[in-house]
Every structure is written in C-alpha cells, then in structure tokens.
Amino acid sequence: MSTSPNTIRVVIPLTLRKRNGRPKILPPDDAGLSEDRNQDAWVLRAIARAWSWRRQLESGAVATIQDIATAEKLSDQFVSRMIRLAYLSPDVLERLVLRRRPPALSLIDLADVAGRPWTEQTKIVFEVS
Image (cartoon, rainbow, N blue to C red; front, side, top):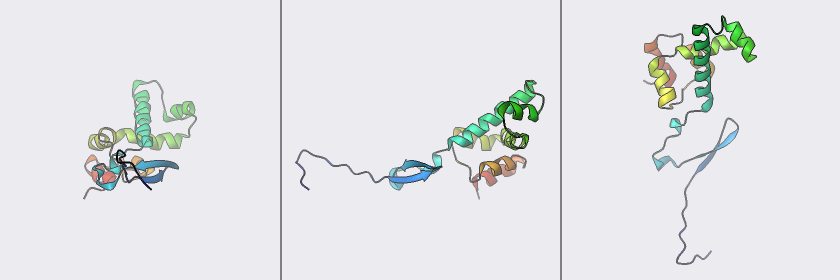
C-alpha cells in the first residue's frame, strides 16, 4: 500500500468488549485512563431510586414499602432490599456517586452490605485491603 508524503496514518489500539450485552470501546491500557472509573449507570440509578423511596417514606408521601411497591409495580421484597442502598455509608456513597468507582459486588450484595457497620462497608464494597 502506498501513501503520499502528505498522508499521516494514526493507529489507536482500542479494545472492544461487551458489557451488559452492549459493545463498549475501551482505550489502550497505557492511555492513563482506567476502566474502573467508568461507573455503570444501573448502580447510580439504583442509588437514586433508593434515596427517592427513602425521602417518600420520611416525608409521609407514602406510609409503607408496600405503597411504594404498588405504585412502582414492583414486589415489596425488591423494594425492601433495594431501599437499603440509601443507608450506605457516606464514604461508600461518595466513591460510588462522586468518584464513580464501581463496586466489587453485585447490586444485590451491595444492598446487603448496607446493613453492616459503616466502618466495614468500604473494605467490603471496594475490596480494599
């Protein structure tokens, strides 16, 4: 293949990976960017939803978790489990929401960690040694 002297060819080695069934283009490893900094939107949505439900309960807009479940067309067990995300420690919430660090756990396990003491949550959620 011949190129003219005025042609510049730029090659960027990108990686294509499927995430949640969708293709995602990742930068090269030495680009200084970390895939870990890319928080999945489902974690942020789940936390926002949990805080919304918590505010509804605290303000008296709804009386019970069953009321939320009925309004959202969800099971009361699901709402009961997911609302726990609103009770994660401030450190964990900062890392998840502001710093966009993804958890090392599934969303269900993340909700279960919310019942643990705040001092233990960071280590469990991010596997910090």
